[in-house]
Length: 473
Image (cartoon, rainbow, N blue to C red; front, side, top):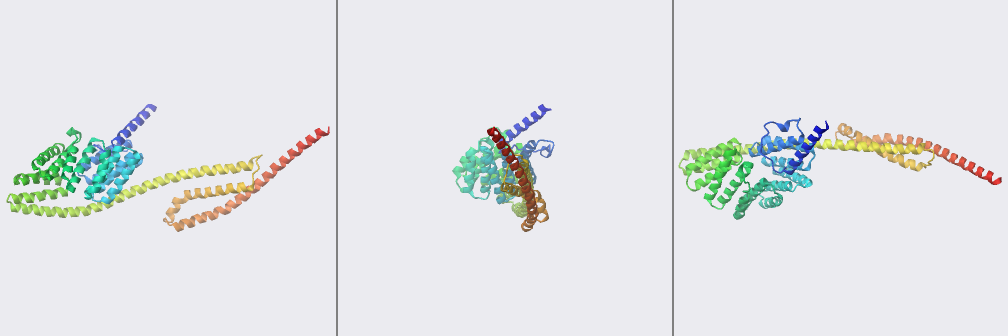
């Protein structure tokens, strides 16, 4: 029985070490076997499956499923009580809010994730959390703040996938500032993934970013080359998050050289791809490209239809943003309930610990008092007993307070005044009882002290009589 237990313990320890060492970069694998919900599996195994699943949902635009997985990650991280895991879970929760268009809450959880990462001490994970904060500022178009955080992340990150991500975001941020040479520099530095199959999303992302940087500099031919590479990778590995953007970008390069037919084909593909992932932003970009391309091709009716679809997508986006706010509120409420539950559990544990300490202290002081009372030789003054009994009273009152606090809190509906009145009533009952006990103990002590003194005096007299008898002889 011992060997299987040790083997399980070793396996769990190795899994935890592996997970905390690479917590900042998860593999994009859907949990088709539902391991994350299998209560028969160790919590660390479920956490690993859930983080992989959350990443896969992110890359494929499954926002609702990612939110649910983020909540599960937070539950498992709280159960495992590892700072690195809590860091990862909080950053994923922050990302979920970011997808839902709630930057304030996104930053709240990303900062919390950074705090846990700093406690955990993993340099790569600290850099990863800083990078995620930078991305949020980039989305808010606060580009200087974004560069500050992204540069902090860049200085710490060593994992190849995260090096790829941070340079992609730095490139796009510099494009936002109009610093195109810096944008191209970081875009090229993002191209660090040697084997496409190891990280298809990262590879496609870097090709798209390099293409964007060349397009911003007006080098259309080079841009088109990288957009084509992006599309090929997305086709091969079914990367829904990057594909529409690459198709739209390549379509604009076609339109720039008066290839309206090619632009229409690419715009149509982009629209189909974005609709599969419910990506309304890229649907808007695709219909905008199609409207321009149809005009360039002299197809006014098709251009008008594309314009109407564009307007419909704008209305859908407005409705989706309202719905997203509602979903964020629901998600936030679920998080609050989980945090409140976690706080209640921790408070109950703390109260239980304090009650145990209170019992120990009461037992020690009570035993001390009784030892002093029933000791055959020690003579203790009433003042010492009074002080000890006062300490015992305070400890007993605190013990009663800890024991009854949850019950009183519930029946008084969290009213401080009623709580104070209840505790005052308890104190009013304890004080007379304390006075009676103190009087009884003092009487017992005086009686015992008198016996001890009389016994001591008797022995002294006997010794003196014995000494006097010997001297007279």
